[in-house]
Image 1 (cartoon, helix red, strand yellow):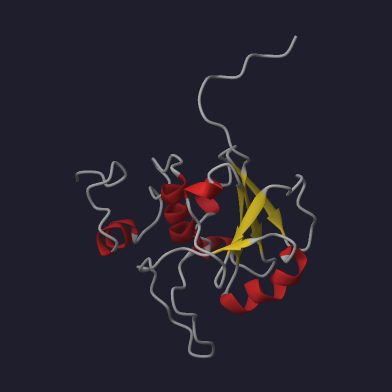
Image 2 (cartoon, rainbow, N blue to C red):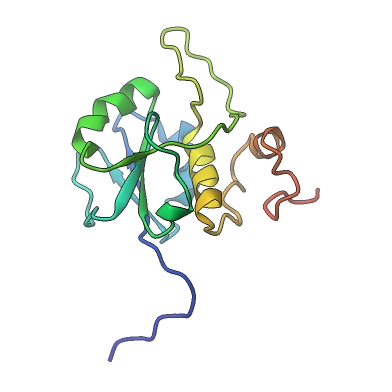
Length: 164
């Protein structure tokens, strides 16, 4: 006999594809690895779920909106250059962009210029989940620049901003 599902909204798990050369110690979404709402895979391994109905967060697509609320999210995690090398494998997914969100993550590349509107993966995920009306509680708990990020974007009074 199948267990009853709890009441409430459901959406596909968020898929995070990590570039194999991405250092886990620098990976902003690493603390989410044990959370069952997120599915991690290492590029170029195939994603172990059907991606029908998913959208890929990226730059240059229509803005992510509440009309995407039932879609799954796929995020590519790596430096901008490495993430670009992974795009070919996911071009079949519609891309959705985020509205203007400011990053708090310190950029240090002396070789490559980060694109305008570039965010740390955890920042992009947080902004996307807010737009889609999905829970964000605890998402930024391990993010060192949490307070700055929330403050820069006018979200310091959200439930995720603990009073300390």
